[in-house]
Length: 189
Image 1 (cartoon, rainbow, N blue to C red):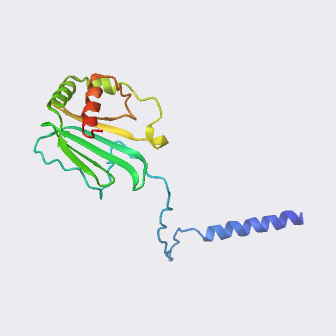
Image 2 (image 1 turned 90 degrees about the vertical axis):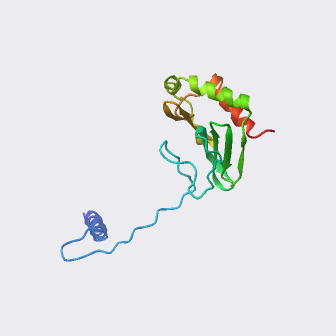
Image 3 (image 1 turned 120 degrees about the horizontal axis):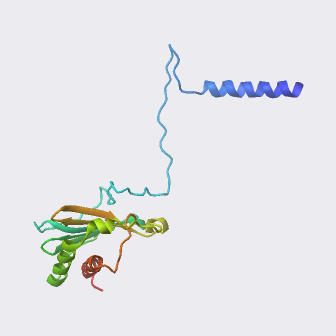
């Protein structure tokens, strides 16, 4: 019984001590609390579909062309020496392009007219509803230090945006063959 009483006293003191540490104000008193900073982590936040993957302080690609954008591809994920890896590729309707990445590098130029014509034709005849109906079922590449690609196609009917982590991309389809050929031509080997 003595041992039970001793343990009960300790529990009571702990409960009273914890209750006294609370932050709730009682009438006639005030408590001063300051927000604690969030703990630092080594994990970069995963971008959602509604957030930009490009840090706001990063150099954004600037297309000198006045032509509207035809295609944007944003790559994000993985870790690079400068932090989270990212890159942006934009192709305008007149074939001019610009590419930028997290290193600050920026490249611009003009697509070969045949590549541009094929890209425009494939975008015009693409069935985006059917493309988006194919769900991605694997593991998003950003889960293993790879990159997520978010595609924005500017069509006569408006923008069509989706990522390879949401939609099962058929890389053998004529649309994505044309996209990959256009993107590859920006960085000749």
